[in-house]
View 1 (spheres, rainbow, N blue to C red):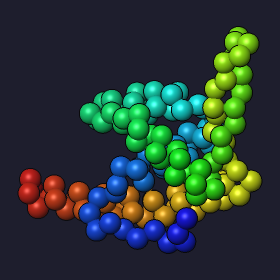
View 2 (cartoon, rainbow, N blue to C red; view 1 turned 90 degrees about the horizontal axis):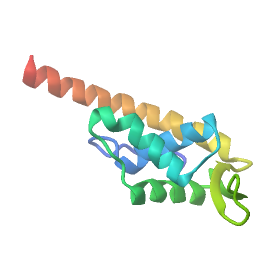
View 3 (tube, one colour; view 1 turned 180 degrees about the vertical axis):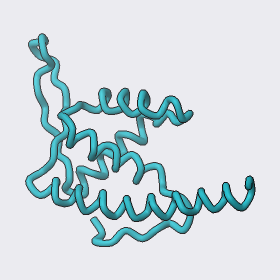
Length: 124
């Protein structure tokens, strides 16, 4: 993971946005992939955004590769053989996640200012 995230020059990329939310959801509780997808879709439905399955899993895989999250397989409740893959922070992952969130906060503030300028300049 790079030490300093460089802004794209325009708006935040979808994967960075999803990674931010996946980190926050992991902080709140242990969830498995499909549950994470369901929560994200429900949260963003009022805004017309519906993250797709592949993007959520790509973001999860990025977080694993960055050493932030790890997969833990557990037996599904009430099932003898079926396993579910949960995600949790690695030993150093929580610190890395906090750094990532701080970096994204800076970029989100920049994006918000850009959008506010566009609204003011074009609709005031």
